[in-house]
Image 1 (cartoon, rainbow over the protein chains, first blue to last red):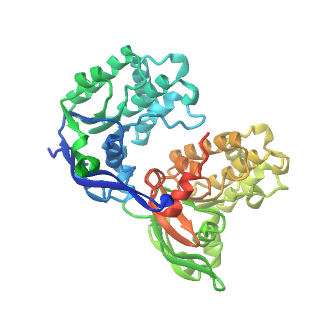
Image 2 (cartoon, rainbow over the protein chains, first blue to last red; image 1 turned 90 degrees about the vertical axis):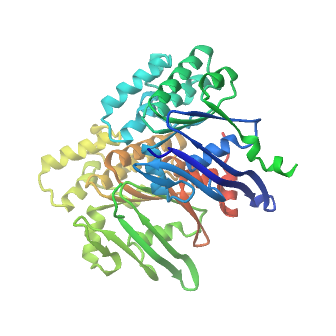
Length: 235
Length: 258
């Protein structure tokens, strides 16, 4: 089986046209890979480019140079050069992402927000909702919130909806951007268990965790992003 | 993923005398895909939409559409009658102002039923039942079926226009600022409705909007227009999170945070 995720020689900078075109380098020469069943944690101080790396892998940020190879439906797709339609298909079937904040849609109930990725893959609504209920129950989200849109939820409640949405599918690669940031100890442990299960299922995980306890519990390997920082190279 | 696009647009330009309406636009639209065309007023987005939907003859270029039999036809080599039939059955067009897309002096039920009759439905009971069903789907009470849209609020009129367009199960829907002029709570309801219908029915859609939040919510892919040219084109998330062109950066940085 091919390595699920291989990143090679990726460069990224932002050109701020509204600020006289100044160029902000973000990361240089990023190369690493994540194996099946492995959890790699991106390390380093804030602002070093950890979230930017996740966003490039998910296709939210364009890259200046390099390749991001994802093993998708028995072929390799280069996210750095793929067309939008291919990226959407990769996101639907292969590449999952739990962002730091939930982007809420007005009027859509928490349960439906969680079930949506399964419905998008063609699974019948009742079955998808049942799975969504299991996850929300496991993450201790009060049942009376399930039928409400998450816009008015607390930070931790929204985060749990977001985690459930990211974990409900059987994507072979999962990107996690501080999924435990606003959770209490009990729910942090639930998430740690859920990550361990994903690893046993052979999912390749790449994440950012500032909480040391969680990082210790889930990481197989810590990748220090400082070495890709252009600022370090200049010093 | 199907492997044939629904619409193939190549080199479409429209000039108004020496002024540019839109210039050299090419793209393909795939089944189930929602494309947003954004840009400020006068950037050519509505001109482009009208050229694509045969409401306006482009100066140069071709627009090919995959018919239900699987063959591509160039829209501008079809007869007027064929184009009209396509617009009434396989396509929908949602206008910014519902009064442009509805008959204001006939009942809500008749507005929906008219499109059904255009595709050959003649049974009054069936037509009324289908109209009722669609009014419910767009959240208009069935007790309003005999009222004229004149008696409806702006948001209801817009939802009725959507029902009228979708009742014939079109494969492609054009929308011109579908939420323009509605207040935000009504907008949210309409967006949620459109999003749900597009997902359930597997529609393809081309949505013109100047509202980037609407584009983010509805579309997979986005084209940014300025002075008649497409200046940036890509995955909606990518264009909004990492805009490359100076004008796109200006647009994105001008969004007000609530």
